[in-house]
Length: 193
Image (cartoon, rainbow, N blue to C red; front, side, top):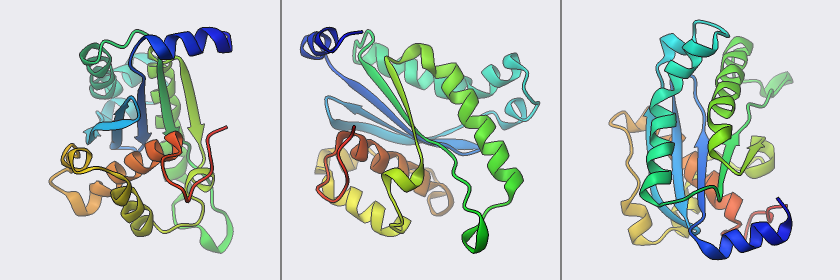
C-alpha cells in the first residue's frame, strides 16, 4: 500500500489500534479508536491448548478468545482494514538484571509468535516492540501513573481490570501504555517511526 493510499484510507474511516501486553496465560489488551482508548481488559488464553507445542490447530484454539475479541472490535467499529496491532516482544535481560526463568521467556516467545500468526491477517500492519524501546528503564508503577495521567475520565472508566488486579492488572496497564506510546500521546516518549 502506498503512502497516498494509506492516507486516503485514514481520511475515510476510523482507525483501530490494538495494543497487547502478552503473557503465557493471558494478555492485557487495549483498543484505541481514532487515538482514544475505547476499552482495555485482560483476556485469558486457553493455556493447555497453547502448551501442546507447535501444532497450529492447538495454538488457534488457545488463542480463540483473543482473536474473537479483536474481530468483535473490528465489527463494532466498522473497520475494514485500517488497523494496527502493537505487541510487546519478549526481551532477554541477561546478566545480573535477569529476573525470569529462560524457559518462561521461551514459552512467552512462542505465545507472541502464535498471536502474531493468528492475528496478522486481521491487521494492516503489525509492530512488535521490545520493552526497552517503548518504556526504557522506567519502572512499571511510574509508567502506569504516566499512562493514567494521559487519559480522560471517559478513557479511565473504560478500563476493565481483572478481579486478581494485583497480579494481572499490570498487563492491562502495560497494554494501555504501549498504545499511548504508539500514538506518541505523551511528551516524555519518543515519536513513532
